[in-house]
Image (cartoon, rainbow, N blue to C red):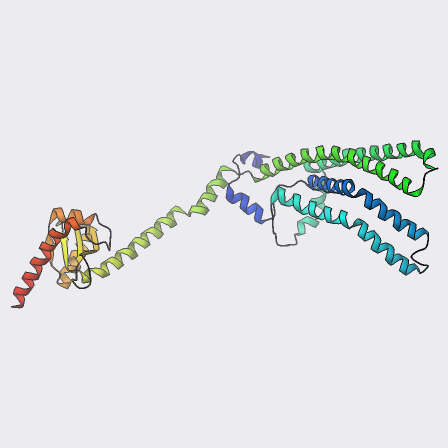
Length: 346
């Protein structure tokens, strides 16, 4: 009981999906059953005339020995005729069962698994005397009482009409009997329909209650979905380290390093025949800036101090070309470097 009281949170979409994967959905068997009865009533309503005519013809043929005297031949013919008569009912029941199960819970495909607890006699005994078992027992008792009343009402009506039925032919007797049976079905249908609708809402409420989660379960699920914060932090740290290594591997390809001079460093690459404009291939602040300058000195790459330009270049994304408004300032630095390089060459 205490465990159920802790489950105060509504089921999350993930919890519902897991339940669905296990084949756990809100369904009322009574609603499916009443749908089958409704389908049978519809078949009777729209096809009662050909139905009774076919039964009458089959009965007449059987009594008049039109099927012959061979018991096996008679059995085969009667079986075929019976199947043809009952086939619409079977098809309606099948369609109603599948349709109303799909409407209530959708299509659910669950792998067949053998669970020993489902055949445990002690577990079955506890289920019988649980609240759910007692509720189902009361519902079954009500259904039984109503069924007995309908049978009694049907028999009583038949006995009252019995003297007048003695003078009627077989076809008329069949029609009258069919009418009585259909009336009993209609009475029972509307009663069981009300029970089925009530059962549907009860099952839905019970299902929602079974899916409820405790606050701890919600937190654990969020961790499972989003990942452990420590692990996520470690992954981000590794990703940053890998990105930094890739960036540092590009520094030796730089044309010039623009510095702040202490806090920022931006590596630019420019090749007149390859690139349309200078490109930011590495940048960093603090220790990363010092590392960029260290690699540049080792590779003999010029380092130019220009605080305003360095701040502007640092705002650009990696592998981005510099904007046109910086062309003049960067071109001036690169031109100066080319001039100095040419002088050294001479």
